[in-house]
Image (cartoon, rainbow, N blue to C red):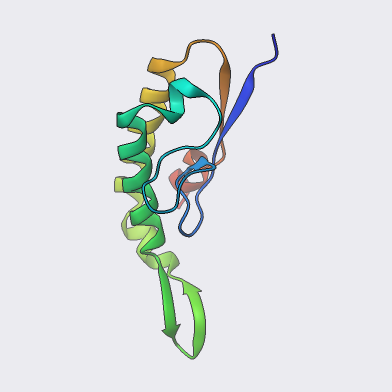
Length: 110
């Protein structure tokens, strides 16, 4: 049986679980155990809101910029939330998926 891959990636207005509903954070992976888990949805949404807050509009003469200093200032909070999310994904894993975490190492190195 081929396992699905769940990608963890941060971007503007997107939960770290790709892909997710922009407004609610509900994952849309097609994997029921993930997509229907309220804990995963809640953490996913919290991370999305935090990460999206690092973007600034009409700032420094630019239409949109990413505030990397703000990301660094929130590094520990991001790592804490990502850890909670990954722990929950591992807890509910029924063997049908594996996790491709593209963010924890990057955030840790900030």
